[in-house]
Length: 355
Image (cartoon, rainbow, N blue to C red; front, top):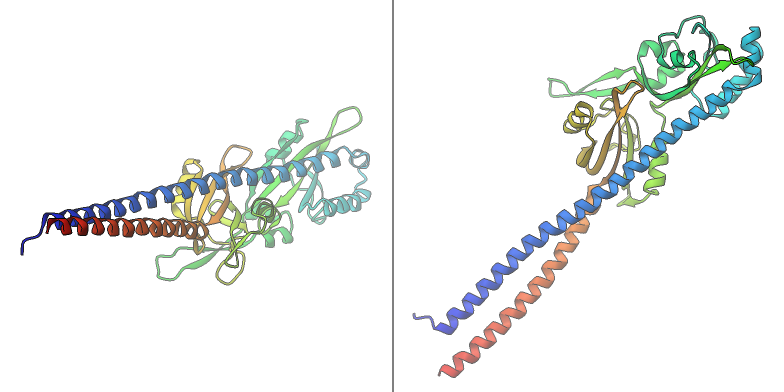
């Protein structure tokens, strides 16, 4: 059967319309996806800045408290006269009021005079501690430090238990096994204790243990994400890592517990911990995909000891992308149907004139 020229034109027009519709759909899909992801990544970068500010603010608060304690008259007098009993109750009260996990006083040789949080442990030397070294040089120092399990054991059973975390380690077997991590990450400050003539009497150091301390990560979540939820789940999360290990987080596992002891994705570890480069892209976090930002945490010697993380559930942005694409598809299909109708109408009129 011979196909008329008008019919050929109609088919050609229909095919061209379909081709344009498909190509425009693919292009718009790419543009929408890139735009949404780009916007989400910019937002998560801003959130990481806020998280860093919260982290540094907490460190500054600790430094302010330790400096204030080092200036107290009762402390100077007690160290100079060797009368520590009146100090113990005073410093214990201050430690609890200021939310410190440990507070230690040493003499000018670095020998421990008093561990307020663990009074039974004293007489050992902390001269190898960089914080104490600087304080005994009449300088102050604050920052992040990682204490080994052995070092923590000198600080008391309470800190040792709080620091201990069962981490999930990949095994060569099918199942995974759990290994106990005993190190602890602390925010710490040290200041010199000077007599009234400016001579060194000793030093005082104190701080907080970050393992299982949810104050910072929850403050980040409340400030940045304001408890926003998506389908009953927190849309935003924050984590502090010791190495690649989650030691404090508000990321929840499938059982609804904080995912303490889980580890960061291998690619994140290699980039952030291995090369010191922030990770600003999607990542698999515990059991779901998030748009994430990770950056390294450095100790006072400039060594990478952990990571600071914030992330937003990718599902919310995936839903937004799907809705926009469906909306575009609806309008483009509607336009194609109208174009198809017009093409058939024109073809039909041309066909009638030919008879």
